[in-house]
Length: 402
Image 1: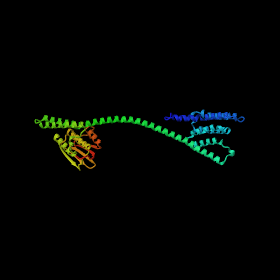
Image 2: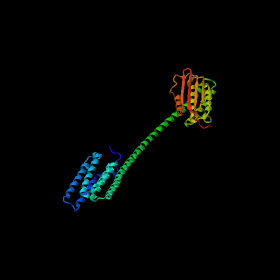
Image 3: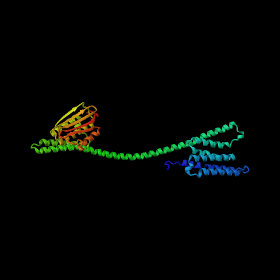
Image 4: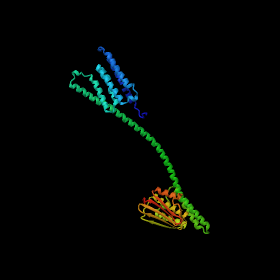
């Protein structure tokens, strides 16, 4: 799998240097050793032989291995141990090969981050300094001094390797976090665009439904009343009364149409609260339809929020319109009950009733949608020949007194 966060240019260069350091230091040590005029008998041959051994070890145990094998901890350990062994032999033969021994400090980075990094640095330090001590004349102070140097060097170099690895890990995590954040921002931008589109579509649909409800609750009902009065005027000689009612209904419907377009509340609620508006609605409805309508308000009246009052008023308006159109009733009742936490609206009639109270007609659907919009509920009970009862329940969210 391709690394999504490959090493930086500096990291790649450092890793490349670590791979070639043994060859550079071995070549430098060999050149200096061969250039020395004080060569013992057979010394050059031994130098070449040991150098060839070290070169063969580095090639066979590291460079020529496949990359997958080379990265394994066992292969790293074996190569490091062989390098130190050949370095010890070379420095024992000629102290100038201390230069080659320094390669161990670089290779110790392959063990980081772990305690073996310190072990590798300490082992390299021992090989480096063992050839500088004249053990025949070594004193305790000299040995202690060298041990102190080895300890400090181990902590400094080993700690540096581990710190470098930790910094590299943090940089990788940082780069990954930045990449994830960029991806998240791009996804959020796409999601935001989708949400805006959906919100626009939902807003358009809600507005269409609102306008449909308003037209149904105002214009359609007003036009129905006008048609009823005009038909009545056609059946009698003295039609002035019916024509006057039809004209009043037309004027009210026009006013409601304008208010619906502007998304305003019914004019009955402009200067009055719900009980007074219900009374006016009931009086006008009874006068128009000729049905005896009894209105009752119970409980402690409190001013409700405009949304609640408009919803209950429209539900009452729609329910009474259904009574006028479908029930063929002679009596009806409207009860508005304030019970503290909720407000109840009940409308009953003694009309023909119907078989399917769960009908999906537009009027019933409109009432249900309005009540759901304010957290309310809607129930309807009807029995053929025994009338219909409509009940609406809404939370008593209070508004500002007028």
